[in-house]
Image (cartoon, rainbow over all chains, first blue to last red; front, side, top):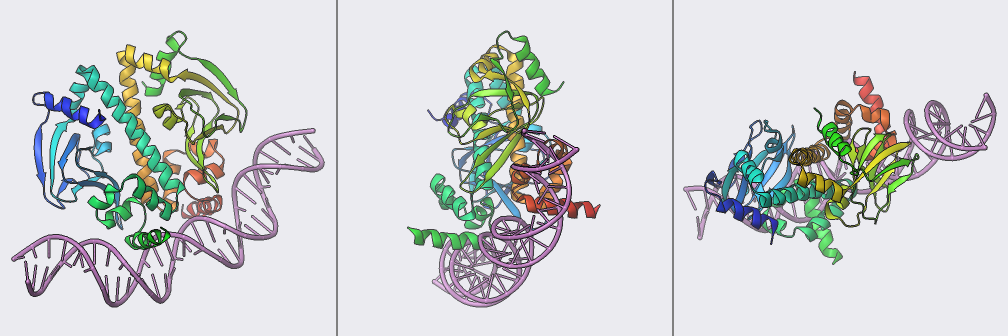
Amino acid sequence: MDLLVQLHQIIDQTPNAWKDDLQLKRNEYLKVKGSTDTNLYYVESGCLRVFIEDEFEEHSIRFGYTKNFIAALDSYITEKPSPFYIQAIRKTELKVIEKAAFMNLVNSNIEFQKLWLQMLSGLVYQQLEREVDILTYSPAERYKRVLERSPQLFQEVPSKYIASYLRMTPETLSRLKKTVLNEL
Amino acid sequence: MDLLVQLHQIIDQTPNAWKDDLQLKRNEYLKVKGSTDTNLYYVESGCLRVFIEDEFEEHSIRFGYTKNFIAALDSYITEKPSPFYIQAIRKTELKVIEKAAFMNLVNSNIEFQKLWLQMLSGLVYQQLEREVDILTYSPAERYKRVLERSPQLFQEVPSKYIASYLRMTPETLSRLKKTVLNEL
DNA sequence: AAGAAATCTTGATTTCAATCAATTTTTATC
DNA sequence: GATAAAAATTGATTGAAATCAAGATTTCTT
């Protein structure tokens, strides 16, 4: 069975593990820069984005899709303030579990611990893939790869955020869409 | 005490945990693309680089310094062939532990397990930092950041590999060195 | 449903880093 | 230590994506 489904089930079966339910409106912030957030969020419905801003613009780092977990990973790991924002892309429902509660589960439940180790390894692997993508491929290739691997992205997320995730301007992405279409 | 030191000590104290000692000459390969390698390596002395190649060039992903662990992380995690190379930058001595032996330790020693979880979290955090670096900063800023955070890099690693790690050509890095010097 | 606002697309121009090319410096090898 | 080979630097030119600018389309809001 799917890793995420199993993690979610075990938390569900543990009384008081979920701390909270949250409803976010479109564009509402779950976290802003400078705050410490050691919660882990489960996206019941909707979609979120994690981003960081510099002097000039925003850089989308990761998206939180329905039925997935999302967190401000740096803050979750270090338990310190972090520069990330988390924002709802549209109306979103979340369940919240605190790091402490999550870690209690990890330490008390061998099965859960294995799942958590798998999830962490998976994260490292994903990050490595993303690093290679950003380093190795041209904008056109990055676009094609994400189109293949995460077609849902284009359903759920506005182009401007996708462009930022792919490290290019919306104009460049727009042009790529056209040229890649013509190649088919 | 330092995480890596602790991990190393526990392995050292476990009979037959280390599978092997290896000596690599300058430019010798520890792993080439297409191979599966689920070993974890401890760098006794010397320095290694992990890289991936595309049609045109090589892209340095990570360096293995003295007294650190290094692995072909994707292959280690998936236990499948991976596109990465690992190469000695200069004469290097390694100790080898197999994934199975390492995981036995993780599963039999609570203390070790905690350290491993910490190390995995640390990896996720590092990868995230690197992602932000690559996405957010200009070549000049990327150079300055790595100069601040890993000055040892410039002692241990030839410029051409650093350039590739920083996602720029050796020419660009060379020019940056001069301009950044002039700013001081 | 109408109007406003945001987003996306398309075109023209600019810019920064890559490429190409030559020289100097460093490192390796005999 | 001399010679060869590799790496680093420096300069000139090119090119791909960013920026600037305008219009078209989509989507929010009332």
